[in-house]
Image (tube, rainbow over all chains, first blue to last red; front, side):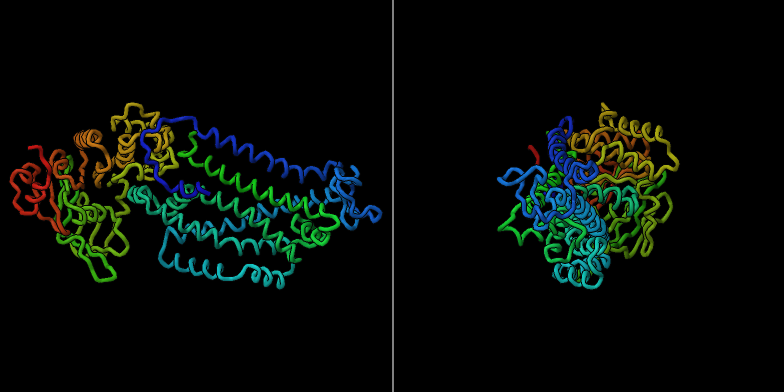
Length: 298
Length: 263
């Protein structure tokens, strides 16, 4: 995330002639978005096409290896699990939920986190003191404890999962946004805006927030990855997604008992989580470059 | 010529952990329309505090103890009084030291000008915004105003950026412009151009200019009157020529002696 720190630098290079902005950044945003778009659309569209193997159990065909291994058949391209359920079908439906959890989980953490961070960083004073105490308190609580307490109390469901993701994610966002805001508010153009009579809400929402966009995009993409990983961890502990719902995290959890006999059950969701988080983070970096007009000129 | 800005016995104090610190002490200043008044002094002399006091942008721990600032006859700053929000950006414009930092790097020049105009001119139309933006850039002697309007700050040279910053300060046609060390970051050639531009603007628009600088020679070139400050007090004030030729105070003499010369 070198981009975050670079965004704070001043455009001291004087007299740069205007060039066509952001060609390369746009290209890499495209090439990184493409696989993400294919996967996202794929997991939502594939179940509708009827091309996937049926979802039910088949005790006559348990732990079948994927089609490309000896003993595998194209009836189950990615093999079957211990109940004879098709791994590909599970993988696709689980991917749907994982992507939704990643996106919504990031939004519910970034939204309040950014807002509180900006308020604390811009207005300082008692606003800052109250928010900073909340951030410290939140960060001092072990995440697993918070998750356990909430889930024990409210039961395991999607809204509860998002509540856990929001509670565990906002504090980091707020803290990073707060310090970025403090750096921006000391810049001369903010003082200039006040001298030009701009109102405080206008300065915050029209000038500070866009200058924070780089930080927020970086945090947001990181948070998508974190949300997916947190959900996987919770599902692994049996606290996340519960059957009949299925996510890549819960597939990983159920597949790990079978690793020695049927590695493919855990392998594909595990690989998918890794690649998805990696792509999302790379995309975040590329978006950062694309967003900043000063850097988007190669 | 009527008095535009008048600071009368202004005293400003900062409350710090170690006790109170007097930043301005009994400061008098007067600017008339069409006049350029230079405030000269070394770092910490209180010249920037004076400039900020006029627009009410002092730090939170700083307050006005005595005296007042009046703008065109109305008291805008006095102990316990701050009416600067009425004049900020409309009657008073401000230009800062480093133009590369006084513009929002993520907004085109056009958007930044439009924002100031929309804030201060009621019910302004889109066409009127564009017309006045172009007009103010032309006043800044910018050769290619429509290209500059569509540029981001980083795409402009230092001199152009400073001119855009000045344009932002004068686009609402304020009566008073405060320039706080606004030529310090520029090279000498550009500095001369910007200073010349100020002179033309003051003559053309009949505004008053408060020109804060540490550069006595520059001030003497540009200003009609000069106020020399040291340690928060006015040590000398008068016509530019008389302050320079016949300094009454020891401090001014030392300031003058500190200017390197060829001879």
